[in-house]
Each structure stands twice: as structure tokens, then as C-alpha cells.
Image (cartoon, rainbow over all chains, first blue to last red):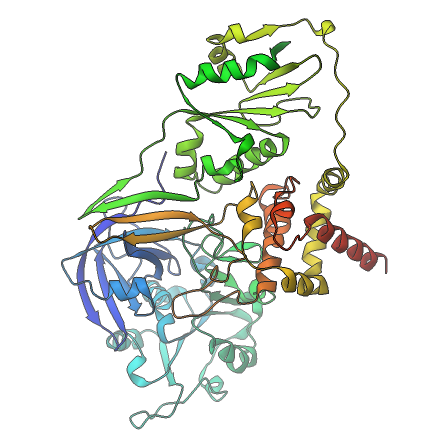
Length: 271
Length: 309
């Protein structure tokens, strides 16, 4: 019998600061011996932690084809992440996964793609961008709308240069800031900057509450239907395999049938 | 027909005790699930960089499950297999032989591996799951006797009391319950129940079919690191609380509704049955005396009114 709860111990290759509260963890890919294709689907998550301290779900941000490592952006938020922030390169971490469904990559083929995310919601989108860049000719116009509280909380800034060669990036921050000259908030003006064929476009969202704002101000005016808006949602998760009940969302388990749902699936969720 | 006399049952159990751990659930407060899915289960231990998984349990016998327990066991076995086998549940379940003790009329084995069904003259009819159990019982055959069918007079079936009868009647139509509970999301009854409910979680701990759990990690001063799998309850305040302080189900009303939603809606879509066997434990142990039958009846009534309106 396979023990699905047993984590694998892997080496931490590097830890870097992304912002005052977020660290980038680069850990050895524990599956590199098993296959040579895709190691996970962008949008899927892993449970990271250590026995004695706990485990928590995190989306991967490195390319799904990266053989040597997996990258995670971890924000200091609670007991587990506080402990993870004390770990250093050369140490070990325990990992299990990947879990969940991931983004519908085949459905997105040949279509225009609008990616909307905020703050710490970037990891699954980043993995998706790496995938899109790899198969760039399979996609139409691709836009990334990325917002954060302040300029310093925009994560992965060092990767924007590479991404900008392939996709359009629009950055916003929530409040005016002396060093910021770009747009403030997900304002309706941004709609003018996005050129897509609304009948053949998909939107992908991941991030906190203000995303709903983006939905009303940008996706609705753009005319993308709810069935084509894919939302990567967050819930409390513990088992990762649809048993413990913590992450239930209507008829679905976020860890099993999600974390990616179409917007109309979760619009009327009772919580 | 293979039978066992009432007077022999204890001797049989005593004989089994020589070889196995025998647990009699008839005097337990907690439901039988605790033997397969303990309230606190130390699943992993870590010493430096080595993870030790909990050891397999020794073979054991679970005796005395009643009719409802057996039905619940059937469902729990199925739930724990889907979508992937639950390692720690089956580590115990596969080591166990479950012997039921029922007085209800049945046409086949209602659940477990062996069932003693009370018939007349201090006799119990023995139902077996398959040949494996027949072989195993051979070692103990002096406790059993083969009695020709014509010599057995079936006792009149004991009538269920009114509560159980009505509950069983409702459970015969799981789909109707599903539709009614789904429809009832804005029903004022949930507000009223949220006022009465203490959010203590007793109903879910006493339910033989509730299997919510939390995974909690501990570190002790003498250097132990371990991970526990603990019973959890979807009516507890921190059930959907995440790091950073956001609670996805802050209101007791939502949590209480979610309990019914899992039992009668999500559970139905997953297994085709309500995740309720009508044992009444949640009602009899509820400090606020919330009667699951009354709740279901109120909602079904109003749902039917809504349909005909």
C-alpha cells in the first residue's frame, strides 16, 4: 500500500529574499529520476514543511519542465512559514505532491490569454508564463496584469525582462507611491491597453480579494465569459488528497477538484 | 444454517482473547471508527533527517457492532478507498476482523466480516462475508453448530422505535434529501439552529461516519518531532482558518449548514448515499438537543411546499 501522506526529504539549493516578507526557496526536484517530461501542471501545488513544525500548500513558480529544481515563493504568515523562513541553503525540507488539477493548458491553446494576479499570487502564474514562453507560437496575445500594495512587493521583478520579450506586462500598485509612475489600482483605463479577441480569449486569476475588483473593472468590460475565467483559489488544506474536508467548497474539494475552478463554478459557492 | 448459542458467545470471545486483542464496542461511548481512525494518531516521527512511519497494528477483533454501525463501516471503507487508499486507516482495517451483533432482519451480510443475527431460542444465526471467514472459524467450530433450517423458528422482528423508523424512511430517498438540503441554503431554520448550536463538535465526534481530520505537528522539549492526525470537526471555529487570520467559514451558521451539506449533498454526489445511517448518536449526545430528524423533516416539508407552490 502506498503511503500518500509520507513526504520526501529534499535539499534546499538556495534561499533568496524577494521582498521584506517573501523568500524564494529553490529546492531539489525530488522527481527528477522518475520522468523527463513535465513534473507538474502549472497551477498545481505542493505541500512543504517539516515534521514537528507542520506543512502548508504552495504553488510552484519554476518551469514545469525544470529537471533540477522546484521554486517556491513563501510569505511569512503563520507558524509553518515562520519556521520555513529560518531554513537556509544546504538544509533540508520535506515535500509531497503535486496535488490538484492545474490550469487547463490544452483549452488555452490558440487563444488570447489575460493573466491577472496580485502580490503573493504570482507563483502559479509564473509557472504558466514559463510554459507559455516555451510554446509561444501556440498562444495569441498574452497579457500579465500584476498588482501589489507597493512597488517593493511586486515579486520576481528580475524575471520581467525575460518575460517582456514574449508577453505584455502591465504592473499596478494599490496606493500612490513617490517612485511609482505606472497605473494605480486595477483601473478601468487598463482595458484600453489590452487587445484581445474576446470571443477567443481566456482569463486566469490568482490572488487575494482585490482580484474581484479586477474582474468587474477589466474582465467584464473585456467581455470574457465566466466559463473562460479560471480562478486559482485558496482554502485551508491539510491532507492534499480530498479526505480531511478542510478545503471543501460546495461539491468540490479545492485540493482535489481545484485549486483551479472556472468562475461560474465558484461564483455561487456558499462560502 | 450455521448458528451460535447466546451462552457460547462469551466463551467464543474468551477463546479469541487468547490469540487476539478483542475490543467489545457495546460499552463504548465513542463510535467504532476510533479503532481504525483513532482520535489522535501519531503518524510520523522524525529523528534528525529520518522519518519513521507509524507501525502496523497487531491483528485484532472488533466485536458488537450494531446494525447501524455495520452500515457505517461499509460506507467508511468505501470513502477511505476514494480517491486514493488511506494508508493509516487500512493499516488497521486490514488487520481487523469485525464481528457484528444485530437483531434486525437481513437478507445478506450487512457489513463487516462476520455477523451474529439474533433469532429465536437464544440462538444467533451466523453470516459470513466469504470462504476466508469460514476457514478461519473452523478453528473455533466447537462453539458453533449446524442446525437444519426447518428446526429454526424466526422470532418476530423487534419493531424499531418511532424515531429510528422515521429516520430510516427518510434515508431511503437520499436524492430527495440532497435536493432539499441544496435548496435550503437560505432557509431561516439554519439561523435558528446556529443560535442553538454551541459549535462544540460532539455530533461529528459521535457520528460513526464523520471523518474530518487535522494534521498537527508537535515538538517536545526532549527533542521529539512528530505529526499527529487528529479528529477534527467541521463545526469548530477554526476549521477553515488559514495562516494570516482569514477564516473561510467564520459564521457558525455556515459551518453547521456545511455539516449537513457534506452528509446529504457532497456525500451523495461522491457515493450515491447519504453519509448518515440514522443511528441517532448526534441527537442523543447533543448538549443543545438538536434533533437531526426534526431538521430534515422541516426542510423536506418546506421543500415539498416550495415544489408544489
